[in-house]
Image (tube, rainbow, N blue to C red):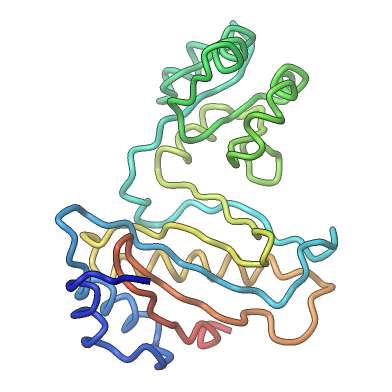
Length: 230
């Protein structure tokens, strides 16, 4: 794979093979960020579980202490009498069947998070094949199917993220922006790792956190000794 000059220069500033302490790793990510925009910092955690088994699934949601640095557009599915409540709480869009039809007919996706009141899931279920593959389907486990719409909207706006295993048993999550600096990124990292550890399935055997890597949008991966948290 061809790598640009900036990327190659970055590789000289740290040791690819070293397992860094979490805060040190995040400091390296910040210092090696060369892009002209504020890069997102992500965490990639490979777990010693097999997500094909229901009793080894790892999934949940957490409000990061310092948010994600991203402006989140929230769509709420609710009954007509609760639309204003959702909008007052900060939702960008709120509605019922009208929103379902807009997505189905116009291929409309100008939102990042979907929240639904429980009494709307019969309607929202029709969008399963559309929202599911995009990771946008609301779920009780993620706290996005809830009667407390206002609270869910406020959490989403404050930087709530959902973590879940992909097909290779890796969790990929944003933990902020390079402009946050290592200290704030470390606070977000600690909160996310603690949540993942707390969500450890009883059926998981052996080493739970296999590898942990952090990287900015355009930067190389820096390995973290995540087991220092255990």
